[in-house]
Structures are given as C-alpha cells and as structure tokens.
Image 1 (cartoon, rainbow, N blue to C red):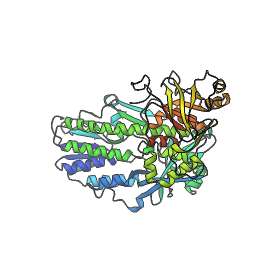
Image 2: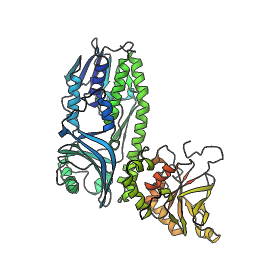
Image 3: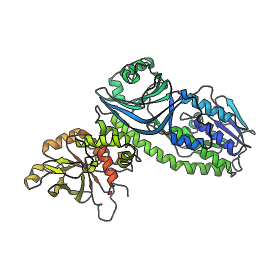
Image 4: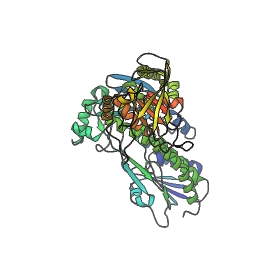
Length: 548
C-alpha cells in the first residue's frame, strides 16, 4: 500500500546505503519493522574514501558509525603526484580510507542491532508480493542491482561506459596517497592510490584501451596482469604484489535513472546513480541518499509522497555530482591518451578539474604547491599571479595575459595586447589569409582563428598538426573560442589541446567576462596561455557559444 505511512520496510543490500537507511529509519521510527537483506558474499574489497568533515557530520547522529579498529583505516592531508621524475605534493585536506569489508560488516552490525530490524542473509531475486509484502522495498544493492536491471525500462535506466579501462586492486603495503602518471611510451598508466588499512592500500590502475593493447596488458589472464602491473609499479609498491578486486579491465559505467521509484520500490546509492571513482564521493552520496529517504518516510506522510520528496530532493544533488564527475572523467580520459605530462601545470590541472578548486582557493589552502606552479610558469620565483606572468608573442613581450578582442564573436577582428610600450592591436584572421601579407601591412603579430569544432561537431583537426602548420606559415598565436558547456574542462577542451601541443601561445576567446580567479586557474592549469574577452554577437544578445 502506497497511500498510507509505512509499517513494514524491506531493504535489499546492507552496504553503506542500506545500512545507514536502516539505522536512520529505525532511529526516527522505532515502530517500523525493517527486514534487512544481505547477500551471502560481499562485493569487491579494497577501500572506500571520504572526508573527515563528512564523517564528523554523520557521527553527530551515529557516534559509533566509524568506530573501526585503527588497523582498518588510513588518513592523509596531502597527496603525492608522480610525473616522470618529479614528485609533487599538494594538499588533500583531511581524507580517510576505510577497509571496505570491515566498514560494511561494522555498519551492518549496527543496523541489525536496532529495534525491530531483522537481518536476513540471502540474495533477493524478486520483489516480495502478497499479503505480507512490505510497504516499501529499498533497492540498495549496488550498481549491478539485479532488481533494478529487471525493471530497467520502468526506471528509465541508462548506462554509459567510459573510454578508459580500469582495474581495481589492493596491495598488502601502505602506499602514499598518490596519483602516479607512468609514461610507458606510448601512452600513460594512471594510478589512483590511497591507504585504507594499517597494512593495505587501494591501487586503481586506469589506461586507454590502445595503451593496454600496445603493451600486451589487455588479453592476458588476470594473474599475469597482476604480476605485470606489480613489476611496472615495483617502486611505488615497494615490491609488494597486487591482488585484483574486479574480474579484469573494465570501463567505468555511469548509471542514470529517469525515475527513482516505482510503486513500492525505490532506488538509493549506486543502484540509483554512480559517480566516477576519481571524485571519491560515491559512499558519501549513498549515505546522504539513505538519510534523506529515511527522513522522508519517517515524517508520517504516505509512501508515495515520501518517495516523491526523496527523489525531488536528491535528484538535483546527484545531477550536480554527476556533471562534476563527467568533467573529472574527461580530464583523466584525455590524459590517458597522451604520452607525456607537464609537471606542475599537469598537477594543477588535476587539482582544478573540480570547479570548487580555483587558483585563489588552492593558493589559500596550499600556498607552497601553488607557488611552485607559478614559478614553473614564469621560469623563476615570482609573487605574480599567472595572468601577470610575462608572455612573448611574436616580437611582443606581454605584461598581462588578459586581452580584449574587437570585432564580433562570430568574427573577432583582433586582440588588444598589453605591453610595456602600451596597447598593441594584433589581427586575428582565418586560415585563408597569409599572415606574412598582414605583417607587411604593419601588424606586429598575427593570430590564427581556430574553430573549437568542425561544422559537424567533431574536433577540427589534430591539435599538434594545427599548431605546427600555423607556426610554419608564420602565425604568432592561436585564438580559440570557448566551447559550449558549463564546466571548466568542457569549455576549454580545444584551447587546452592546442596549449598542450606547445608550438604557439593560445588565447581563449570568451564571451563571458571571466573573473581574475578563473583566468588565473585556466592559465596555471595549462588550459590556455591568455584569455581575451569577446563582445557578444550581436551586441546586447548573449553569445550562442557560451552560457549566460
């Protein structure tokens, strides 16, 4: 019955989502009977991660929620990124890794001890029906939820596979919390690693399929892959072996559901949505789902009203988290297809792939790391911000990396660049124009307008080839319009590709008047060399290429 408050609830899955839902609903409504179903065998081991801030928030209500043995946890306040021979430390601000199976066993036990909770150890293969059927069935059985998959059309489930492949592994050694960017020439292997116990660490290896195939890592039996990876990362693992927690290389699958509930059934945690492991937020989101749903059901409204309230509240939060995760996924997928890194600027790009991590925020929280990044950008120690680090374009030495554009968004005529001798206008032309002719007419530098994408929406030419050809023809810089999208990485995708090619300075053309903080962030992370504000086209109407 969905037209009255619940009296009997079934929870399928006793991981973080199912256990915390049971804890919260039992705390708020001890009169409700809860059947907590847990399968006979647990999923992959290794670790989970969350922030100390979130843990403290949960502990205010559930003081014993994270009362694990010290041997089943690890903590850190900074992260190491290994780029070739460089070891670059940057802050991570209070993170904790927990041994997954120990944590799940602990919270399941807490939930099972609550009043009117019955722990049932078996796998649920169908929705309970009949007279004694529960009023609500909470599907908390993870990304591979059998019950959700059996009703995929009803929930409107879509599953999108990422372009890289990953292997989730554990190692019997305490690794430094780190990102390892291992250059295999060609291609990179990227490691996401953190300690989750006194004697064990999570070790996730991610790579482009072409890189795996090129090095014979994709078609070997799993024990051979484990040995091969342990040999490649012997220094990072200090000679320890690797033990895979997944069945082999696989893409990360992002799960989205149009509808989070149907009748008496409701989705929470990974059964409802997944976010890429690089964000470290999967468990946090699952617990928040659980607390929200339990609160809605405990208010005494009808089941239907409670499920509507829960879905309406959480969908907005999850949509934002998945949008941020898509940016993170794209950043790692792009990096995986490269065969080199760029030291501090690569690490700054890694840190600032999330919108919240801007230049000002990182400088406040991690001044030593940010100072090192600006030092590398300038080629010497300096107190200047990235936008004020001098830049040479053609024969001009710029005092500022912030410019203005004249003309229109569709056809910018030139950039006004600031030099020690004053403002200099440098024409921006298309590929049909010979820059030598423009220079002969008096231009001190000429830029090539590079479309962000081809007319069909595909990338307009290989970035390295575009940059090399432009330099050979006599252009002095490249001007690239910001692309559609709301995220930092999406908007600057083409500009970043050309900046990474490194043949000519790149100017990002933005119809939005970006803040000094955002400009500094884009330059420090190597997404562009300078930023130019372009008037909207036509005047008074927002540009079609940028969000208002």
